[in-house]
Amino acid sequence: MTSRPDEAQHLRDLARLRRVRDRIDREYAQPLDVEALARGVHMSSGHLSRQFRAAYGESPYAYLMTRRIERAMALLRRGDLSVTDVCFTVGCSSLGTFSTRFTELVGVPPSVYRARATHATAGLPACVAKQVTRPIRNREARAIEPQLA
Image 1 (cartoon, one colour):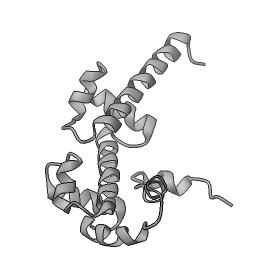
Image 2 (cartoon, one colour):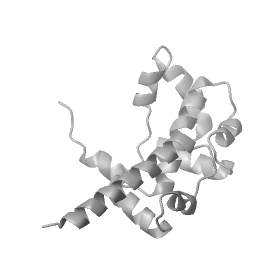
Image 3 (cartoon, rainbow, N blue to C red):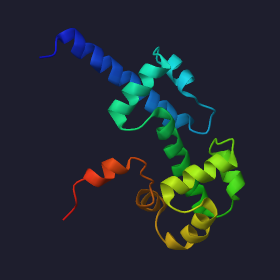
């Protein structure tokens, strides 16, 4: 049985983790690192990383990169920016790292995605296109999701 002080601390920690996640969602294009995120919620970087992974199934850095790649996908679907421009627009400082992470999450390099996606989502409202093309980093979570009948 959990004591009330332990439960209260757990709830405070979850609130701090939500603030970190919300900050990543808002400031994904800014230079963010785990130390800065941890300072913002008065936690050590190691504690933040462990707690964030336990709560959300991935590290803060992985979550940040997923948000960046998700935004990059939307920009690439528009088709008016180069892959390099998209890379820097979403906050990545290395085209190589961006391309590697993009390929890990999406399954194809950004240039291939750009060529294919402009035709694949033609006619779909942007909100629908975003939902059906959302990257999923945590493959284990996808494997255990209930199948829709």
